[in-house]
Image (cartoon, rainbow, N blue to C red; front, side, top):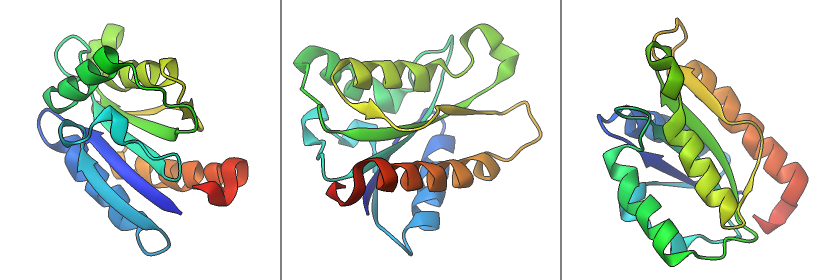
Length: 155
């Protein structure tokens, strides 16, 4: 399966996790990884599966590297029909009112343009005892399996 791992990060944690997810999947799949700040919304390819790792910053805002992408997504309003994505968030329940809002915002923006989210949006809690990889690796495997089942070889 052709997979692109995209990440939105403020401090580098989402980038490191995205690279780890890519390394976990690349033995069985064609995987590439990119910062959302380097990815244009019109670059989506319906023949690829997109796994997005995004942190939250401040009061639940998108991290700095995801802001230009989100702004372009809202300004250009591309039709993302046929695009499939899974999304994984990084957050901290110490900020319970805005926990995971970065990934939630991205999910809503993509869905509003016609992209289809596969599986649940999972958010790792930095205040919890689990390592992000312990949640992200099974999540990624599950999203890929669901994508293969739902959309087959078109991706």
